[in-house]
Image (tube, rainbow, N blue to C red; front, side, top):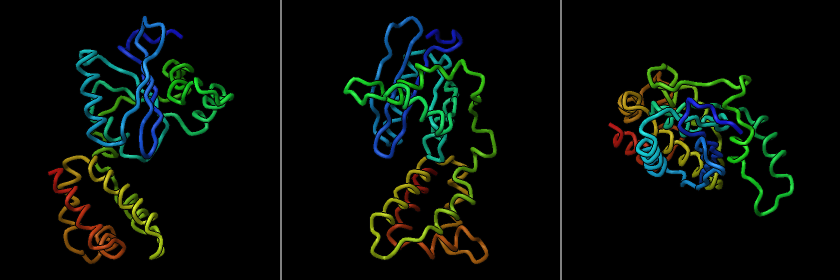
Amino acid sequence: MNPSPQYAALIGLDWADQKHDVCLLVPGQSAPETLTLANTPEAIRDWLAQLRQRFGGRPIALALEKTRSGLVHLLMQYDFIVMYPLNAAAVARYRQAFATSRAKDDPTDADGLIINNPFLDDTHEEIAVRLTKTSDATYPNDDYLVRTFQEHHAASDIAGYGKRVKSLRRDFALCSLGRAKELSPRLTARRRGDRVSELFHDRLSTAGRALLLRVLRNRI
């Protein structure tokens, strides 16, 4: 593999609910570096700060599966990260090609993302990430929040309800400052005619609402 010389490093990131597997290749190195990150904003920010310091703020290419997860939005806040989003089918092909034996030393999905070198494949779209884009500045957008609030969970489905609150907590923790300032007053009290506000109060418990509002206010 010959990394594109414009990048200080190439990274494949395989995200999951509990952790992220990372594979990093520096031009000139004979083998990639691997590590595992906890799925918390703090762990990811610390890692990104280390990357900035290590490579002097030079551009770094990062490939990951497309997702509505707040991870994508967090990465967008770092101007030296250039993302290459891959659809699930592409990642599945990498997994099939490089982990068929399921041996202990098989490459992870993160390895496959850089071994297959999507950074040099013009079939994948490169995104220069900037928070000035409207779609980024409004994350999580109203349509997403309405769909999430409308998810039905039976009273006995504690795990399902908890997973929704956990997902929303992560989304709110990673939203932009402007979005946090806009959402906080809308969600503090139920506003008739505001679908997001109505569903927030109608579909979430008092404890769930209090937790999410605290996360938003901590962003301001």
